[in-house]
Length: 51
Image 1 (cartoon, rainbow, N blue to C red):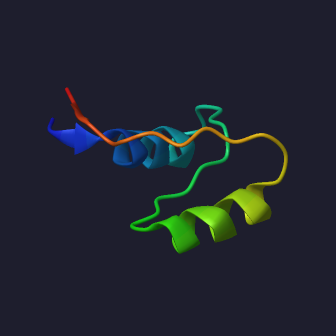
Image 2: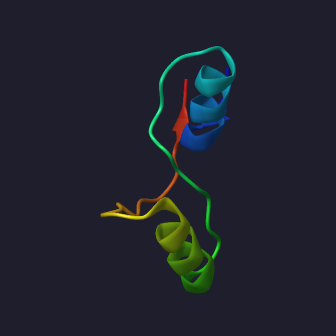
């Protein structure tokens, strides 16, 4: 499989594997909105392919 980390997280969640809340953002404004929706401390990181 050739997935981005967020795709793997969504796949895990769909099959009942517990995952932390997350969001994909393409710019700073999207990241700000996602952080507000998630609440609490957040981590911003670049996506890399896994698998």
